[in-house]
Length: 163
Image (cartoon, rainbow, N blue to C red; front, top):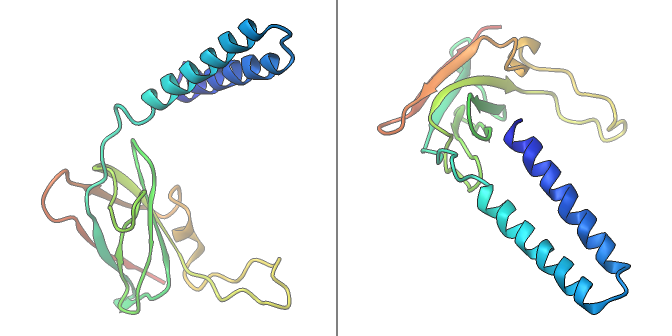
């Protein structure tokens, strides 16, 4: 059973106990159930991120046929750990963010997606804007882009997309 499945079941059980405590007729029962709720949250927060690697600084530059690609959304998805993302600057440069601004990405192999679209039409905001780069790059499954992030040292990635 996966860790998320266990955590989900724990949260469900703890919330069930709490809801039942609202209808408890005895103060002792209420106190017991409240204690269970507190212990459940302590256990839950103690389980989060205990075995996850910390992000390391990572940056790079995205080009399209050798020209800087400004305003593109870059997504790095590590094999383990949370995703990291960034938006490229006017020179195509980016600094990845996982949790805190520019904290990087979890080390290891990463699949990459890059997306750049026309601005949203304010008159028709529900229509998905046209992609300005080949659609395949918008999916980590189809992009073919991968990089390995090191645990130390410089993690700078130059990625040239082809039109």
